[in-house]
Each structure stands twice: as structure tokens, then as C-alpha cells.
Image (cartoon, rainbow, N blue to C red; front, side, top):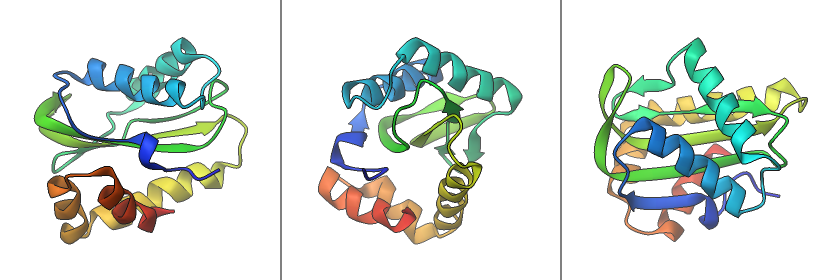
Length: 146
């Protein structure tokens, strides 16, 4: 199973807070049957947020967790209609949610994060995602991370 597909991508979503985004991240995974316990997953995402903010600056946040509630490794992409506050970052619009099953090789989690971080250093990649209008085009851009 691919970590990303069109069902894990949402564009121009109208969410107004970090809490709404995290809940929506969980809802997407739950709808796609990639979670066995949505509430536990949300708790695990918040536990990770308490360790250190997942805001990366420059309008990007990467909420992520390894959790026993995750069935399949997944990358969720949410492009918000309007930027929101994410802790100290006041302008987050691109959200990359990473969910990995607890116990899965640690390197899978790190491989996804490092691949994403490398791509985000490329202004063209970030610019393409900021302006993308449909899921199919977005998926083509994001496939470079896998």
C-alpha cells in the first residue's frame, strides 16, 4: 500500500486552528481505514506536539507520530484555504501529516521525514504545493517524497 494517494490529499480546506487540523488529519486516516483507534491516534499526535512543535516555519507544519493505532504508514497532505497559527508560526498553510505504526522500523518514519525535509528546502517544490489546485497534480508532486 502506498503511503500517499489522492484520498489522503485535501486542497483548500477551511480549518481555523491547529486542533481542527489535527482532528481532520485523524478523520482522513480513519475514513481510509488506516487507523484502528482514532482517539488514541489523536492523543499520540498531541503527545508528540508536547515534546516539540511540529511547525517547521515558512508556512509548513509536519504533525507526526508512531502509534499502535496506525495500521498502515501514511502521508496526509492538507493545503489550507487560509493560513493559521501553529504555536509560534503564524502563517501555516501546508500540512504534512505522517502516521507510522508503532514498532515499524524506525527508519521508515525517519526516511519519510528526511525525504520531506529535503524537498521542502526546494522553493519550487513548496511553491508548486502552495499553488496546486487539484489532487491529481498534487499527488504527482508529492510522489517525489516516496
